[in-house]
Each structure stands twice: as C-alpha cells, then as structure tokens.
Length: 145
Ligand SMILES: Nc1nc2c([nH]c(=O)n2[C@H]2C[C@H](O)[C@@H](COP(=O)(O)OP(=O)(O)OP(=O)(O)O)O2)c(=O)[nH]1
Image (cartoon, rainbow, N blue to C red; front, side):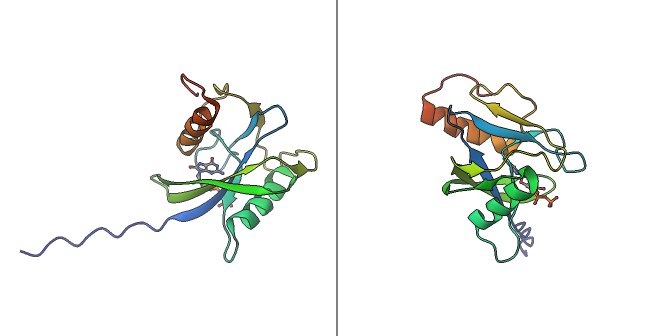
C-alpha cells in the first residue's frame, strides 16, 4: 500500500528579536499592538526579516521603526523555532546593551523594563524560553513569569 504523502513542512519565517539590557541589568518587554496576532501579549521587540536583510540589519530597522531608537552592537545569542497556528517562526534573539535616541512607542505599544520574575502578563509563548535562558544565566530559581 502506498504511504500517505508527508505533510509539507511549513516554511519558517525569520524574525529578529532584541533583548535590550539597561545599565541596571533590566530587560525591555513591549506589548504587541492592536491589530497584530497575540495583541496585548508581552514580547521582546523585533520583527520579520525583509528580503536580503541580515538578522542584525532587520533588528536595527525594526527597533528604529517601532521604538525610535538606534541600536549599537547587537550580539547574536540564541535561535529558537516556534510553531504557532498562524505561522512557524525562527526567532533570532540578539542581546543589545547600547542604543541612542528616546523611546517612542510608534505602534501604540507599551514598554516595561523588567527583572525576573516578570511583572507583566500575558507573556507571548515565544518569550517564555528567553526568560528561562536569562534565569539560567542569572542563577535565578523559581517561576519566571
Ligand atoms: N517581536 C517578537 N516576535 C515574537 C517573539 N516571540 C515570538 O514567538 N514572536 C513571533 C510573533 C510573530 O509571529 C512573529 C513576529 O512577527 P511580527 O508580526 O511581530 O513582525 P512584524 O513587526 O514584522 O509584523 P508585520 O510587519 O508583519 O505586521 O514572531 C518575540 O519575543 N518578539
């Protein structure tokens, strides 16, 4: 008997995500704006790569567009694959310690500087592993959010 045809793997969309860390060691979360999937969920700021862009180029553009800041060095940190009903995404997380400009929420988001455990909710599923990585780095035990 013929095998059933395999379901084609959904193509993953590459997303550049920034883990901005301030002088006090806090990290920045932003809420997803109205009109996007998971509106109101908290995440690390970023967005999809456009054709021909590197991760760092896309991150620089997205943070300029969404937050009005210009980032300095971005350090590629972790890559994670998430399968949502709406899309399969490959998240490229970069750490960023330096930026210039004043934060402006250009898409009507909200921002919050956080430490562990995170005080905002709900947190996007794709953000949860990042909190666990930060907890491991910091030797933080207990729920992260
Ligand atoms: N920015 C961001 N996106 C994340 C995180 N975790 C996670 O699963 N995602 C997912 C949610 C979305 O499916 C995708 C990002 O797409 P997006 O819709 O925010 O990107 P974009 O700003 O380019 O949006 P658009 O122009 O298509 O409206 O990645 C995260 O921490 N930050």
